[in-house]
Image (tube, rainbow, N blue to C red):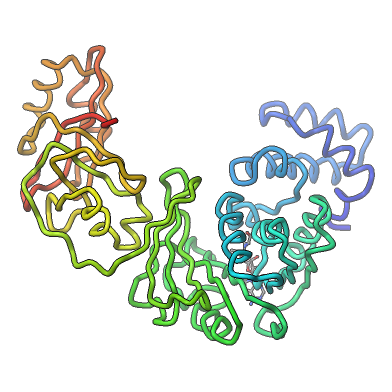
Length: 388
Ligand SMILES: C[S@@+](CC[C@H](N)C(=O)[O-])C[C@H]1O[C@@H](n2cnc3c(N)ncnc32)[C@H](O)[C@@H]1O
């Protein structure tokens, strides 16, 4: 019997409950004690699963993570619940009632789609991963909506489904895979499959070059809590060529208006740091227009403006000082202002924030933010604090 099968027995489930909150430091002692009453194999499976569940809390929340089953790769590769729920809602709003989830992994997306009321065929070729996805559908009471099939996705007939969703494996033997053709299955296969379906969503790495986005796709970059998580290529949304940046938890979506690059302008009173999804989606010009600003430098995604105009798509800072890059001057200025808490942000600078903080040794009751960047090509420091 494999580990998962052991854990699904009544004895395995009871043991999983018992070891749920085991701290890593206690594991050895707990294992020794439990092995007196349970098979060693089951004890180590339960402790291993408890550890995976603890790791999964950040993605799935304590309640779901505590009921679900994981494999090490499955936790790593699964979509976090917030992003999966957003995408599932969008599919539902597009009228999708059934979806073929091709490359379902342990079922992160399948669960979210089922919870949005979508019937899911979830396919993965890895036998253990497929079994875990099935266990998760059951554990979360979604088995009636999720059918799990162990198969190669390239051999699955998706006719009859309202949509296909593909989340290819992006990790090879040596870490993350950047070339979309090296995904498993390759992006070209996913696009071909998408074009045959009424609607489709393909999850890709956020670093995907814009040139490889097919003309018929809408491309959406998604961040959660300011961290860019993924890009999605949507098909059949009626908006080919559209570029969007969506910020969770909102959700707030900025839709590209095809603006040309914003011009460079002198440093104003405010600096706007666009969200990573906005930057990856190449929508800095849209944010610049929204705040009535321009760029500090033609190659850097910092926007500067004279007025504070709150926008969800960028963090605003009020700038108090603008100096050429010079550590001694920064140190003197921070001493004068009694700055003890220094946040270092950088774009277009090779300086290591930690090293800078060590050199300037901030001391005092005040806080400040320093931006290490370039202003019209020259290394510069802008000092300020969050606005509003
Ligand atoms: C990134 S994971 C999917 C994660 C999933 N969306 C989630 O949220 O849990 C990709 C999965 O694709 C599967 N896979 C890769 N190539 C496949 C193929 N040709 N057929 C079926 N599954 C495949 C891998 O086994 C892996 O579980």
